[in-house]
Image (cartoon, rainbow, N blue to C red; front, top):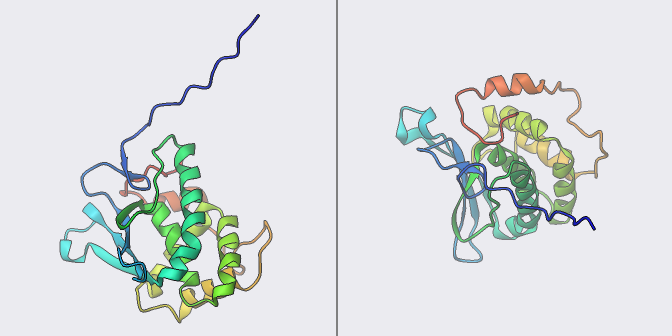
Length: 205
């Protein structure tokens, strides 16, 4: 009688830190810092790593979230990120007190959701999470790029693209065809070209 072969776990393909950050010398990544005080705000900082020659400008604070707002999204974000990590045979992770390294592309995606909910009515946050999950990764990267150009700082939450994100993700639950209207999402190749020189384990295969 034939026996069924047991599924064998594949070895981890690349050593990583946190949520998919390559374990290399100072890569471009994000850091989510969760304070020990359970009422303290959670910060998201972009670290440009070796991309910048001026280390004094290597860190860009992107958003500061009230703890209750972070708590409202952390579980879904963790699950979504870990699905992506498993798809690439990378080690999964969990949020912990202190500094949490996040891959540069996942970090951009997190910023889109964090920017959308930072000033949103609390009851609309679950809607924003569903709409964020409905976006393709390349759509989230494109939105990050457009938003970060002019309104990507900690104090830019109530204007421009940041305000648009709040309304786009939080007002109405979107259907599968949701994407920002009146804009043209670039092709995958163009998005990849704009990221040359930045190491990520989530680059297109």
